[in-house]
Amino acid sequence: MINWPAVIKYHSDDELAYVASESAWNSDADLSAFDYEKSDVLIDSHGHVYRLDYKESGIVHPIFASNIISLYEFIKLVKLHASAQGECCIEKIVFRSVKEGMQLVDSMGEK
Image 1 (cartoon, helix red, strand yellow):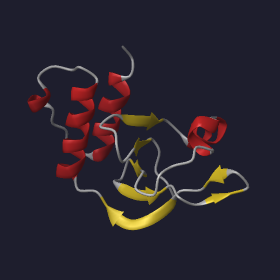
Image 2 (tube, helix red, strand yellow; image 1 turned 180 degrees about the vertical axis):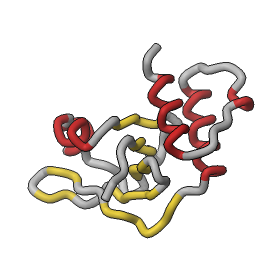
Image 3 (cartoon, one colour; image 1 turned 135 degrees about the vertical axis):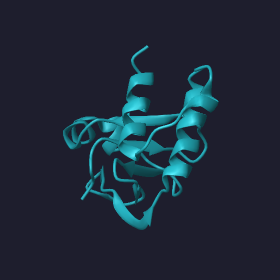
C-alpha cells in the first residue's frame, strides 16, 4: 500500500515529480497512464520504492520493488532536484524523514 504523498524519480532526469495523493495519481493520465521506462520508480513517504512498469487496461499499477530508499539516498535525490529547480544553497538541505523531504519537494513546485 502506497503511503502518500509520493514522488516519481525518472531514470534520466534529476527532477522529481510530486504526487500528493492516490486521487491525484488516479485522476491525472499524465501520471497513471504514462509509458514509464523500466528504471522509473515511485517513492512513497515511508521510502518504499515501487516499479512503474506494470500496466493493466491502460493504467499503471505501482508494484512494490521490495526495497526502501535510505534517508541519505533520498536527501541526495532532493538535492539534485533542488539544483535542477535552480535553488541555491543545496548543500544546506537536510531533513529528518522521507516524508519531510516530500514536503520540501512539494514546496519547490510552488514558485
